[in-house]
Image (cartoon, rainbow, N blue to C red; front, side):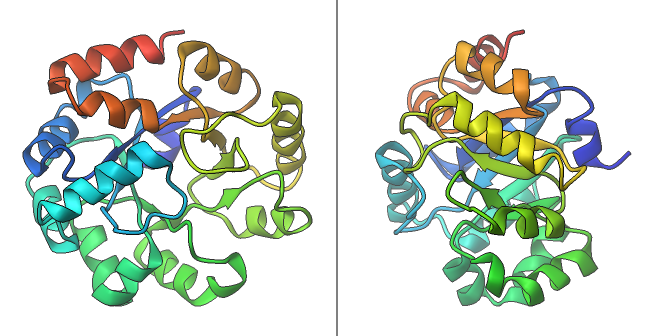
Length: 248
């Protein structure tokens, strides 16, 4: 069983953190605590100065990390000192990958234990070559699909690997969810075209939101709320809050 299969063996609890926020030691300690965490999969955002898919809170956290000197290299170096059996996925903007060099970036990601990537600013129609490089290294390229994807959704789902990230809002992270009926319909339609698990993110903030998302999808993704907690909570306190957030 690979790490994605293990993560989605039951309804998956998925979290997101900004690498290097509030500092790299905190991120390292949190990743090293994951085996005892309620999370099944962690998305790790590489700080970027213009994160177009992110709302204000995550954007501020990302900018804080960039200003503090967190770079792609320092994120890789930090990850090289971590150990977890849980599934790890980068959320990274393509400009960072391009600046680093595609082949070098993917190779290092594999070396430090990353299992997949989410690249929110890479159009599906321009991803074939990059997807092939990911496949060759055994890295999943996880797509984002929203209610506005239309007919493209079927093609995106067919080419996906790892899991499919279903976007639950029309805006950026931290916003209000779309009417649940629309998201449910999207999930139902996608299940006709893929056997991969589908996880809902964007706008998932409370235990009630998590329970609702997991009632019709294969997992729930929480980002903004967790990043907010990292501002003031210790790693131990953060894990307690996460356990309550994802409590059945």
